[in-house]
Image (tube, rainbow, N blue to C red; front, top):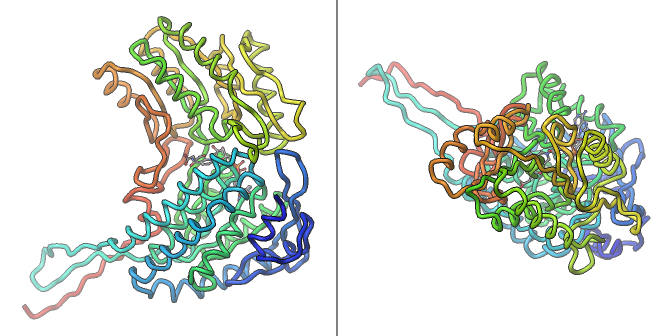
Length: 502
Ligand SMILES: NC(=O)c1ccc[n+]([C@@H]2O[C@H](COP(=O)([O-])OP(=O)(O)OC[C@H]3O[C@@H](n4cnc5c(N)ncnc54)[C@H](O)[C@@H]3O)[C@@H](O)[C@H]2O)c1
Ligand SMILES: O=CCCC(=O)O
């Protein structure tokens, strides 16, 4: 597989996982560049923990070069017509579509999710480029009715400038394109800082953007190791030429970026962690709820910010739901995502397994009971954890207070609607809440009461380019996708023309 990866990025350059080809694979100003200090970091395949390749570990001087290039490119990019930017974005979309299967394989190799899920991610990720290529053409300003006769007043929309996009590893493509589509359509240039776990997908789509005709410097990619990321982000935060930081990742790093951007007063969008409640009321269709729990919880091995983190099940249907869910979870097939018929791949790294284990052990120590799973999988070489169901869980355990980011369904039993809503809202996070009910009054009551930015009613898969993705509380602020996503990359300029002889 590594061979294909090399072929895709390098079109026939030297073969082999340790190919020197990758050593100059940072992407700045429309070309491959080496890290100035010639430092590199490893990228591994979580399905077998083998090295895929090494990529440049960029430092301060590389960041400054990227900023300079982005700053210069943005001045020209913003002057292109919205239609011309739209055509280039469309061309980028078409190239991603053409290379869909290679990109999906690359996602599976560096991130671990099953190939079919990777393909879904590519379709999902590309949809933002398509969507925002259209939205950019309709970025209308306003003509205001002036309160004085001799004035004419306008609200103009301007791109914010250079945007730094810092993204996580769980969706190596879509978390980039959800930002990039909006930023580029608005007339911003972008510096992508992908996760150190999954830099290859970012590099691949940067190359495709070049082939699509997007000018050099409009899209730059900085790769760096976890050890270097503080320094890299400090340079981005301190530089006046960066006007915007759009971050998707953990709440802890999000808070650091809020503090770090104060000095240069940058515009921020933050898509942070979640702790989603998934409530199944007595009024629910239990089969639909079980299907939703499997789709939402075990997608990406539970490593999704919108994964249900706490399953709350009402007493009358509790036994039926638990039995059916346990059966469905027992049937999930775990393995290398490149193999056929796999439902769940590995977790991203050993640290992720340790966290899941810590949460499960803490729950069991406090009276939780494992119905299925509850152990790491030792029969495979990679970082796999068995899909699991836990009962006798309460809202005080680590597994329900923190984002577990793993394939565990912890179930809390409740008696009344008020009790469920109160447990659901008892968290500092507010990304998404799900509930299953066929009682129309209850549906409106509960969707009003949940303190989250998104609500899934009898549905666990909400994400697409048309919806407005985003949270509240410590899950962040700002929206991605929808007609609102582009506003995150826009400044409004109020223009007033006066002293007119009317
Ligand atoms: N709300 C959403 O839309 C959404 C989507 C996906 C993931 N997430 C969240 O992301 C987390 C998992 O992803 P992760 O482990 O990659 O998160 P993370 O916060 O560790 O890393 C995210 C990105 O920030 C970078 N980073 C790390 N330290 C930094 C620093 N000091 N300054 C600047 N950047 C830094 C990382 O290199 C990576 O690119 C989970 O909490 C998940 O809920 C949220
Ligand atoms: O992990 C967070 C993003 C998941 C999604 O976009 O559905």
